[in-house]
Length: 138
Image 1 (cartoon, one colour):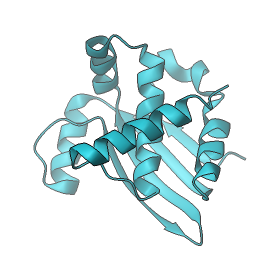
Image 2: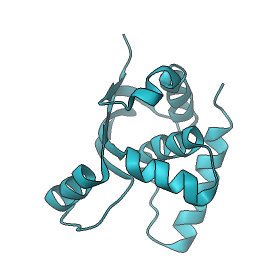
Image 3: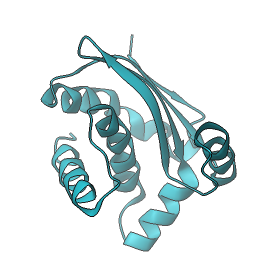
Image 4: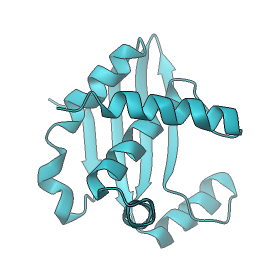
């Protein structure tokens, strides 16, 4: 049974998630962590903004909100992802939608590994790690 769960997946992605659990497991292992359970829920921009305000008191759009913990090197998390942000960012950055989706998926897990992206130097470290782990995809 998979330790990764995907809820409300946009229909265009349903078949493209097959490799994701193994890829994310390998990526976490590189960080010295194992998966207990990680649930991703895909939502629209409007739902994300509502959740961002409700959960974090932030009144703006975002691509991801990560809640979780690491206990005994095992990750337990609930992650909310805005599919609208992914589609818009992919278009603005001239990237494929699947590459942008996967970047956001690993980004959420990197937060649980202790990485932040509040400062420019932290953003640079996060981007390099995202790039590193994107290369591990099959």
